[in-house]
Image: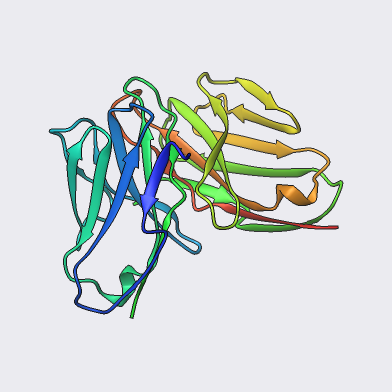
Length: 112
Length: 112
């Protein structure tokens, strides 16, 4: 089983709909991240959380919100999806005091 | 915005050739990481570098932490078809307290 699990793996939704992407981890890491990948733009940070009570905006947080329900769970919400939010979304985790991040398999989101 | 300049954006090489790619920044980084992303998967850590001038190998891969702390290089020797994918550099500016910043990636294609 994957250490960092994202659900769903693929999702097609309509403009204006609310959608939630979920991430859970069994690595026991305190820190969790949401990144967005677009072709040619690499990985851009949306939100991150260093522990359960900590939420921080990243480079491109507009139009997104997050919830850290537990150490192992970090969800990303699009309150009103728009087509330019079509992208590949990755959740990642890291251990406090260590730099290396570990990624889930990604969620491919299409907004039509 | 993103602070890492990664080049080249893409490469087409013959099987057996060596590959070089690099990442530069106008800022100093304390840690450099190199990741590989296979099609349909999340990025996987290849090599981590923690000290200026450090040279680290992982099989056919060799990476170096630039002496100025503003750049890093990844070399792949004797490329094989499974080397195909997107390679990302990532850096952390202040140890432990800031998320990774990623380059835009180098897409590698290997022609058999």
